[in-house]
Amino acid sequence: QVQLVESGGGLVQPGGSLRLSCAASGFTFSSYAMSWYRQAPGKERELVATITGIGVSMYYVDSVKGRFTISRDNAENTVYLQMNSLKPEDTAVYYCNVDLRSTRYWGQGTQVTVSS
Image 1 (cartoon, rainbow, N blue to C red):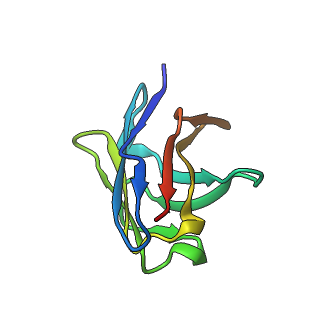
Image 2 (cartoon, helix red, strand yellow; image 1 turned 120 degrees about the vertical axis):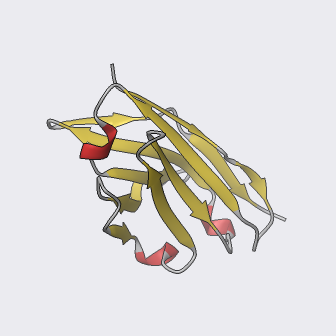
Image 3 (tube, helix red, strand yellow; image 1 turned 45 degrees about the vertical axis):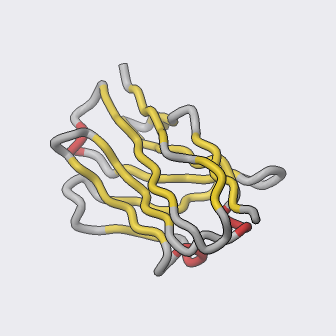
C-alpha cells in the first residue's frame, strides 16, 4: 500500500533553516509528481511546492519562492523540502502528498515551528 513518511520538522528561530524529507513506498515513485502542503492552525491546507516525476519542473507558492527548494531522489524514493530564511508565518504542519489514479495520499505530517 501507499505510504508517505515525513521527517525533519522541529523548532527553529526566524531566519533559520530546516530540511524536510518524505520517504515514499507502494507505488512507482519516479512516475508521479510529489508535493508538499502545509496547514497552519485555523487555516486551510495550502500547496507549498510540487516537483514533477523526473524533477525537471517545480512549482512554488509565491510566499516561499526564493526561500524553499523542493527536490527528489528517485533512487531513494524520497522527496525533500529545503526551507531557508524561515519566518514565523511558515509555522504549520507540513504534509507530503501524491495523487494516484484520482486518490490523494498524505503522510502523517511533521510540525515546523518558527519562533524566537
